Length: 574
Image 1 (cartoon, one colour):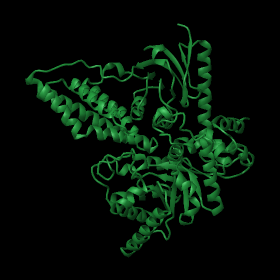
Image 2 (cartoon, one colour):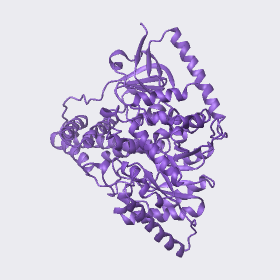
Image 3 (cartoon, helix red, strand yellow):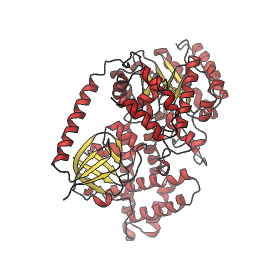
């Protein structure tokens, strides 16, 4: 067979060599099948066992992924778990089997098609997009009904070729031995791509034509950096692949040597590297890699996938352990950031907001539930007695929100001291800058905060009106937009002028390709997932801070993404 080169977008660096395992686009190809009356109970039992197996798999995946990925990826798992517990879905499936005597598999197909019509008829784009989640859940149940068909077993050493891959699948595929993934759709900025980078699993997305050109068993070389896929590689391709592997191995050895090295530029400027975390494992890894502290400790995982709210003691023990785990280094704990596509099962989050991304989330949700806020803030304040704690407030848009929270914190601190608890004398309070209004109006409330953290993931999507989960606008959602850089520069300069510490905790902080750009804008604190900490440290050590700052004018004069990319290419050129 002749060597063929296909091209997509590199989404997760790394190279892989293996045989292709092709998975055609999801479709419920189930023919109508009815069962005898005496078989109904057995068929119901088979369906319920499949659903319970799917639930158990979701719980196992959520536990395994805890700390291995940015928290928003876990939201997909939590949403799928909620669908598996949806009483209306389960009752409808039972009814189709009892009344129509459908087989379990056909009942799933009919119910899926019925719900699909409802989803597709919705005016809200966000709710329409949930059809993909429904398909993944139905697919999971079907797989257990058929006891995992052999076609997807024995994946060791293979490269999965498919239309798209869900974030919830990636860790499972990697544990089954998949060495790389090629998709015909998808975006390098998707949640799946973010998770693949955290797992160091090579991924190429948007490689059109791969499903038509690649067959099961074809030999592939995948380059997750360049986005190239080589079908039936020649001898020269194999030699180049082995050379890339040697280079990657050398790179990993070099990165290992940076564990104890300072995050210092060529011209001697020290940069602070903080870690994002949501689990004890994350905290331990951040400590071992020499993070200067935690710039973002997420608390949502305590609230998700449970029927009730965690009490003060449970929260206190989690926060205290994070503080103790960092051995005196500062720990920034973000208060509850539920809402939008992060939903819990306690009823705290509104289930049917018309536009949840712009609705009751973050600080808005907590101020609407004062008892929930008080419970979390009490736990946080108590944890401050064990080491330096900072409280980070998400989704801030007004000065009044900060003032209301600070009054609540002050009142709770008095009560806790009267109860005999040892608290820090002062617990710093900071604001997340992820709403454009907060970025623009920062001078009006910066006097009320002790530090700032820029959440670029949300800031970019709100500023550009491009949903980061919507592949149809994937090309629009990019931090390399002149408006994004100009607003970032404005926020960084405002913080510098007021002497207020500022970090960036969004995805771009953990991308070493973006490091020169952020340094040029004047950023001195990065907060990133531990998986990329050493790569960013190396990028910092390769940069000349003075030269980058001197070139920031040209960066901010760029008129489009291409101009910014040219600036970046020049900044990283040897």
